[in-house]
Amino acid sequence: MKLNEIKPLFEGGNIFKDENKKPVTVRINKADVDPTLKWLEKIVKLPLIDNKLGSTGIRSTSGDLDIAVDQSKISKDELVKKLKKWTDKYGLDSREWIRKSGISVHFKTPIRGDWPTDDPTFVQTDLMFGDPDWMKFSLQGSGDDTPYKGVHRQLLLASIAKANGLKWSSAAGLTSRESGDLISKDPDRIAEVLLGDGRTAKDLTTVESIIKAIKGHPEYNELVADAKAAFAKDNLKLP
Image (cartoon, rainbow, N blue to C red; front, top):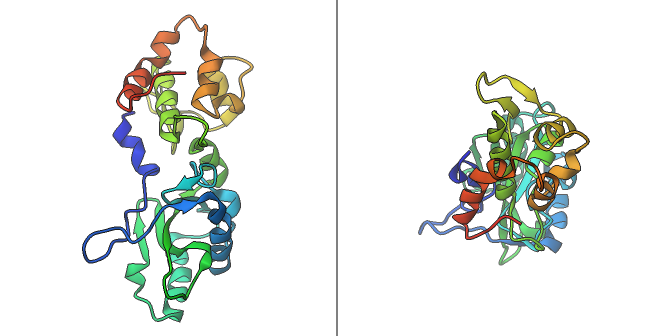
């Protein structure tokens, strides 16, 4: 797994642009995240506050709002329909407010639901379809108290999996590198396979917790080799 294969999951805020190709959305402060999502919940009639992904609501600011949407409960087209009903209410061009890409529906969201006003500010909300419980584990991020981001956790998991002849994917889970067969999408089982017996999903929470779990492993250098090289590109060292 390469760095450029992971970053798009966590880098956002660039979907909606003005005529000069400049983003019209801004970073959002942590204190504004839940009020903004509470407002949006009233429009889409879905649980959003409890389905935050990555560093959304964890770090002091976020470039966008990454939110899991249960694909078994609603389709992308159905969600777009709900959002379009809101834009139609205000006579807005839905193409300037709603976009679709990959597993996501993107919405230009008034911060704190501050709409309509003379000078609103917007954040990009990425409503990402899948299994929320799995996504909250596989795509979890980190706070301000660490130099490592969610992408670095992904890289470390991928490095350890590769050294074990396996492949880690935040979407597919843990699979066989040779056959592609699924090994597990159970977080506790994944922890045991990658880190050893007795380990649980809690040990896979952060870069620091993962490293702590494998320190002293006889094949430690092999386990972290790919991660070490990838981290260096961001001028980071392993804990």
